[in-house]
Length: 304
Ligand code: RIB
Image (cartoon, rainbow, N blue to C red; front, side, top):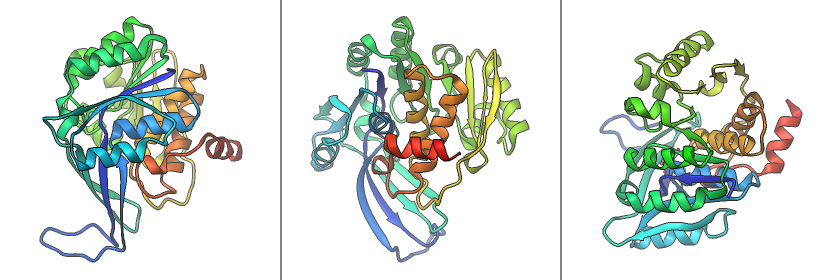
């Protein structure tokens, strides 16, 4: 496998509403869809659809949602043989609302995703034998993810952590992961302030790098992406698209970034791949369902 993803897989229950409801308010929605999601699985589909061999490691429950999600993901270009069916946990669920401005609000019920343990670390070790990149997020236990990061480093793979949903990280996380990709909200949790422009993103990246992180990638949504390593820094402008649903745009970014790095592209180009994948994901409804193909991504890159 070129890319290995350890992380969450959910059934996403998504409603489309004119605006996000206020506390105590009942709203009529315009549509409802049920699609496979989870930040981990979305990143795996993003990488797989972009054309590199990709394996996903995770857990579902032994329930109707688990059976449903496994049937729905079977056609994706992702090796799912590393998904364990856990008899003691429910399948992860995400209850999502998307408004007319394409913004979203998500509630996650973790279920089996938070039951990851040494079994997932062992499966990740097997999958990583020939891998170039390991993708991690924070919807599964950090202890298992960091153990997998240690294995990946020993085997020479690049470790990318998407610190989402964010919580403060232990000091060793910054040394175990090569790249972190927080958005504005996640950056605030990590460094104590929310970057709103390139200058503030640079200040946040500097703090993360001082903690030992090799490369900080600060995603500023529709403003673009700032990146910094020991040898380079820069800003990637956003791709302008007709956004209808921003769910999983960050996951698409990490999938695109991982594929480009697995193919040996330089960091600045890899971040353009991530930004293009993220933009394209906002043009379609749903989570894993919205991940772009390689043809779509190359066409967007060629136009910009
Ligand atoms: O990043 C989007 C994802 O967050 C959704 O697919 C949902 O399952 C939650 O994990």
